[in-house]
Image (tube, rainbow, N blue to C red):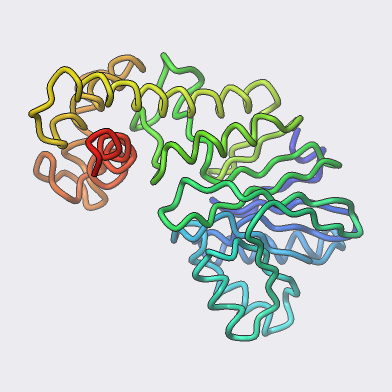
Length: 293
């Protein structure tokens, strides 16, 4: 489906989209050699040069390749304008170094030879608010970065390693997801693993992400009201266990999240376990708001 629309996966976090006589690239990603080699090959095979590189946010797995892209640009293998949110630290640094950059602070429409490109400020995933989504009406395609994180085909069926999304400001994310749901997209391009979803599945992915956030919020209010003397960490674990169970995760799998990290098995609830690195911050956001912290 996506190839027929001129949409190509060139890296684990990187898309290239045929747009008029050019290629638009979504996220530099983090895998230097395969991503750049695939992109240069596509550029040669399609006869379309890369004109713009869009950065969805500054997390390292989406932005680490940026210097490699600039290196290829310096060698003459690529020639592009970087498009990013003005709160992106790496893009701001690139502009200060004299790189060609287009920085945006709010929703904006760029008119390119291939048509309109809608740049959507969609904060909430990162703590610094630099999330940017890209809507291409003529392609029916929406690149949503890391805003959608359904972690499964339905709320009741989590097929990922965790039932939770990794967002810094859940309340703001809810508004950003509303903005994306208002668009008549036909294809939703996710930020990871080259995953593309059709219209129905894409809407479901956005709605599941919202449902998890809203459930986290409501449980925070309920548990704190009923058990006002508990520690924040206790509320977080209660919510994690409850939503994991609601989403069909086995106890073994959800407990494993608390004792596994990037380096392998670790002490349960270690600061370096996946649970504390990626799940706790999203849950703790609502706990902290409810506690007035």
